[in-house]
Amino acid sequence: MKKPSFWVLSILAAVIITACANQRGPAEQAVTAAESALTNIRDMANRYAPDQLQAVDAQLNGVKDSLAKGDYKGVMAAMPALNTAISNLKDTATANQQAAEAASAKAKDAWGPLSSDVPKMVDAISSRVDILSKSHHLPKGVTKDTLAAAKSGLDSMKSAWSDASNAATSGDYTTAVTKGQAVKDQASQIMQSLGMKS
Image 1: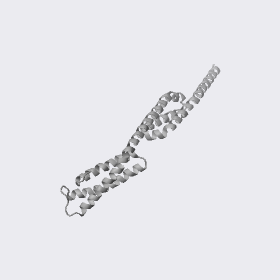
Image 2: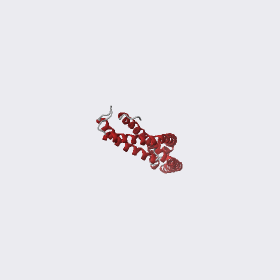
Image 3: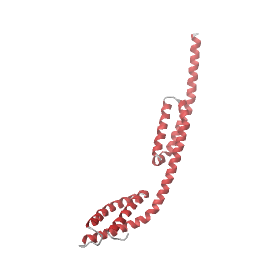
Image 4: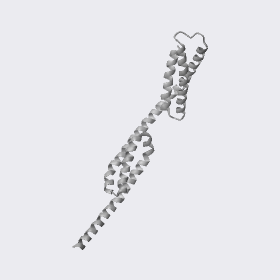
C-alpha cells in the first residue's frame, strides 16, 4: 500500500512542478512586457503624471514580488489590471503633455508684448522716481511714503522681471508670463500712485 501511494505522490508532484513550469514562462513574459511598456512612457509620465506613475510602479512591484515568490497564477491574475493601469497612465500623460504644450504656445505669444511693454514701464517709473527724489516739492497726491514705496517696488520689480526673463530664455514661457504679468500689474499700480499714465 505504501509503495503505490509514494508513486502517486511522486506523479502528483511532477504534475504540479510541470504545471508551475508551464505558467512560469508566460508569467515572466507578461511582467517583462509590462516593464517594457512602462519604460517607454516613464519619462513622459514622470513629467506629466508623476502621482499616477508612482501608483503604477507600486502595482508593478507587487506583481514582481509575486513572480519572485513563484506565484505565477497570481501574476497572471494581476496582469490585466496592471496593463490597464499602464494604458491609462499613457493616456493621462499624453493628454497632460498636449495641454502643457498648448499652454506654453499661448504663453509664448503673450510673452512678446509683455517683453516689450514691461521694461518701458519700469524705465518710466525709474525716471519718475529719480526726478521726484531730487525735487523739493512733490506733486499733488504724491507723498514721501508713496515715493518710498515706489522706490522699494522698483527694486522688487527689477528682480522679478529678471526672473521672468530668465524663465523665457530657458523656454518656460508659462512661468515667464505669470511673473511678467505680476510685474506689469505692480508697475501699473506704482505709476498710478505717482500720478503717471500707464
